[in-house]
Length: 252
Image (cartoon, rainbow, N blue to C red; front, top):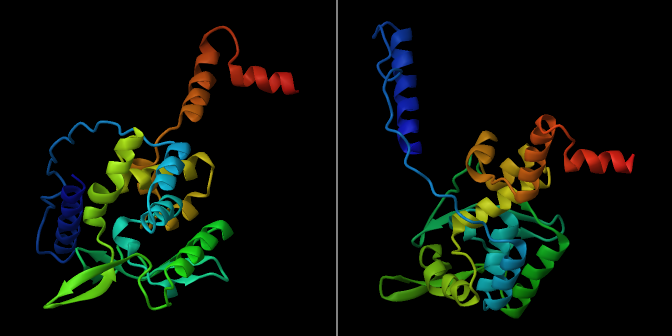
């Protein structure tokens, strides 16, 4: 559906330009109807404790990989990191390349590169992995061997098969919700919104070109916020006061 919306927007822009220069008298794309969107079942987000349980049960380097995706909210194709992309002094991990089925390309972003700010604990975890694997700065952070011709050469890990082969079987064994890369991004976006992280900062972390994408698509409503919304309205009509108002008055 989003692809169709983008096509309509692009055609409409072209037709507007044609009208401006007198080549057309109307914009046929403006009145074009798009098909209704299909029903989207709400996916259940994992809890923080469930993610910790999964991360602890995974083997390295997959454990640190899932940890990094969770705390950074990066796209799976952006896992094409080399160790030189980590600047420990500033706690920045730079997204400078992406990979799909072993082929490198530029990241899907409105700027050429973007930094992901990490905590000191995040950096230390990555550095422990680097030390354990005796990696050099030019090495891939999460390596995979790719066949090129008759030889096998190191390359970044293939995220396309990683979930089914290494991650989801462990999640199933632990009785956790079905895990997808998109769900991990939804989890991160929701946590940032719930913690009132400035929308601009959350947008940059997710790599979106516009902040409205975060709120429209990625941020779920957590139970605590949903309760607060319900109480703030219901309390006005129930003849009493909401639990939140009661707590505020008690504190005063």
